[in-house]
Image 1: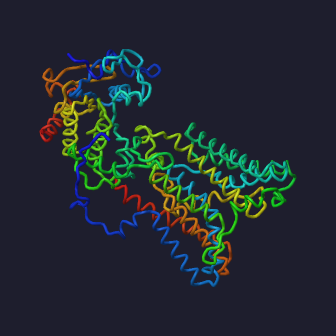
Image 2 (image 1 turned 135 degrees about the vertical axis):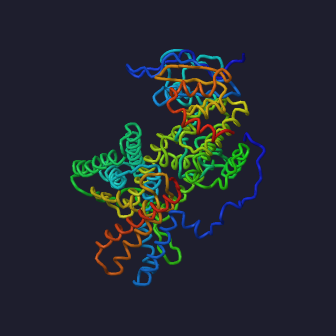
Image 3 (image 1 turned 180 degrees about the vertical axis):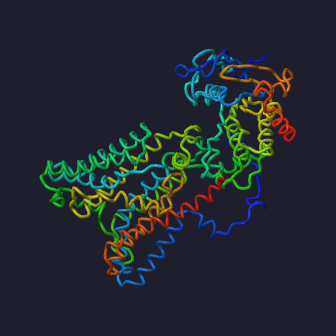
Length: 349
Length: 260
């Protein structure tokens, strides 16, 4: 430290009107998502029988977890000002690679998972390099990789195994071992909690740590908030973005493996359409589409809202398709709220 | 005479067949302010891009501490202690003041995976450094976008000083500011000078320049039309050189209001 003479001043300043903790709390974008989640929880708990039962909670937590593991990196990526439309199909790609290698070629299950990870991370790096090198909008670049992967998933799988889904996964040697790691249940308070929920919690914790307590997190906010400024003060802007695309692909790999070992199968079409759900969760969780604002807990809360609504609508006996309408409304409300908060916070005339 | 921090000898820069800068010479001394004046399109931006390392020169010599150099990228300039405060100030509006202050040069504590930001230290240093420059900030946690233009400018200057700048290049720091705010920024320029820094002050306002300047380089259409030291030139001459006297009345009015 260059400056030893740290002036000690009182922590309060008379020019600051004391902001109540309620106001301070509400300024945090993730908090509104938390409140929304609470309202939805109470609503379905009151209106349906099974929603708040231990079996019910375990079910919607699992639904939220698989979405949530991806929503976190997608949210961080959005905070850095980028999108990844290939995030959904990456989940399918991840499971298919492992599935084909084990069931068709008889490769060791752990090695197959590792190879699948390498393939996914390579696509992530490619996404990042294409976006940072060309300075094209990530929307277009990842739309491209989205369709490429989608085509590969559908056509290559059919060409190799002649079917549209992986069969016989549970006969693969070592299947149980991996399943214990990725898709086993733990009994807590009478709830059979899926392993995916723990992975989700781990990803949220890691994301929060990185974003708020590391240099790298500072850079994520900076590249999303003001790219040129970040570059001028020496932030490695390209590396920051490439790493985020890679992390997103890595989480896609994780979710792909979890669902492969959870259900013992993977379809060539799996994951398609999820990319938009991830983005909705991130925005509902307070991440701003143009970058600079976001958190890891926010997208996780967005995923929780998704999971609860997904199952709550079924438990309430409503038409399942209402979920889409509900998500649309949540998205619009979140965007309007974010916009309002941002204008207040930036205070730029 | 001591070795200047920066010396430009017949610098030139071409973009294709467009000559942006030609035969420009000047110097920046420690504890002195070199003002670069000129109207829009005079070549001020090109010159500071060369000094800041954003672009390298095509003709002439650039000497830093008496040593001929070619600055290929901003980092080359930063490594030699040349810090540039651009008009956008290189701040991220949504981020807190202290995060902006240390952006790109964050302090960390701990090792390996536990290496983390030294949040407390950074907050305290931001506060005390700004205070020592005479900037009394209400809350270092507020987004920097909520500060006034002058305050933001001062934070950017304080940041450059903290990170060991020997030469401070200020790109039109008073351009978007009102009279009072400009006065505040000029005070910080004087404060930086008094700390022994060499300051390059780019402006198109001759009155701001004459208030703090020790040397005046006037550019027009990519060429140097004057490189004088203080006492060699009067504010009126400076204005006349720069704007041809056309805006003299407006500007002298402003001068009266900003006298420190």
